[in-house]
Length: 190
Image (cartoon, rainbow, N blue to C red):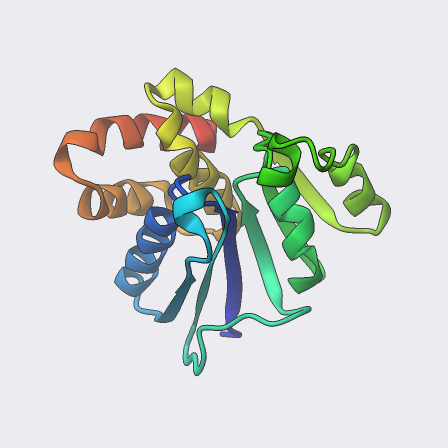
């Protein structure tokens, strides 16, 4: 099997690290060689956060470089645009439609760019928009956006639904298990 490269990108505090842990645990359980690398950046201050997850028969490096990502799961639109050059031709971006203003926008030094996702599509990028925040709120918490997005990725990877649910049970704290299972179900479309 060829190595599959996934980037999980977002803003600090959105749960991208839990998402990568869930994905990594699931893939190891499926018998793949898995490498995960986390780059926290300014995560404590709402800065960009990226996690690389690569899996296959044999994986030598966790890093994904320009033009290598099969999938980019983006928790925010601007982060999708920032990391789009890493997507391989024929790859796909799964992006939360939520807009989180970066500090220059918050303090009035810049405007949030309009039409980000349309620009990506105009360049031939496959983009799936997901209103993950609404699904997470329906599940019971805005913090479940990460699990909703993992559910959308799950539909792409071909690993059965039940195995994802089992991985959630093995990854999240027991008190959050039901919430995350609901969020996954809503994101998956069950």
